[in-house]
Image (tube, rainbow, N blue to C red; front, side):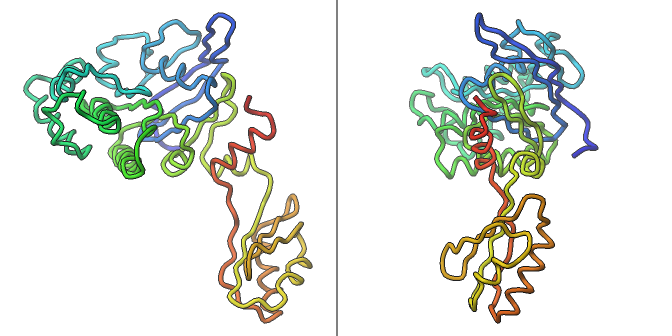
Length: 318
């Protein structure tokens, strides 16, 4: 994605609440069409970043620019370019979905002539067209969250900023949101979202920012995070027929330890600096020499959750 233009620029963003430094000199870019995941512990500064990005927070040091324009500029223009879903979607319970979306749509610059069709299309896109004339008070929490997403994408913004968008959703709805994000990204929408559900972040984010105690401690894609954060390299080997595999694997150069997880299934930890390809080639040759039958040999790549836990263990994230 290196060839894509930058849509959002966070430039030395800092914010202090009395004795608490919520953000401390945070800088990063988000590219057009990119899905950017933002993770960190509670109190790390994620929501403060989001409030600055969408113009709710106006007193801070540094700047936020969207498509080259400062967030401190024209609010009407910002509303047209930006879709925002807070951590808890809040609507007036006595209103119908149609009334709520009409209000938000008009505030986002949708014309009176277009609003009806866009509400219909968006509710269909969210899989809830039957809710249009029902009152918010009659809807479940998960459905209200979908209405919140509907208002965020109703005006087809350039940038979606989402604070814990899948929190409280059932697995089916989480899957639907993930597919929606990917589709919107393919169509050119840029998405920035925070989440505590790290598997979702790993599944859909092009790049990930890790925030700790107001500081951005890392930004990168999963491959970069794995190479820069986790030093342990492991191989998983599965044999359909095991004829002395343990002894052969323990003798292989570059192998630090061998663990038999179950019959015919070995986990190898490699020595620091060992090359995956070289060790893989050597263990395959060694196993074949014993007469063992190899089902699979693959590197064990750490998940985002494991990377995050590794940060915690090292004390990088407070």
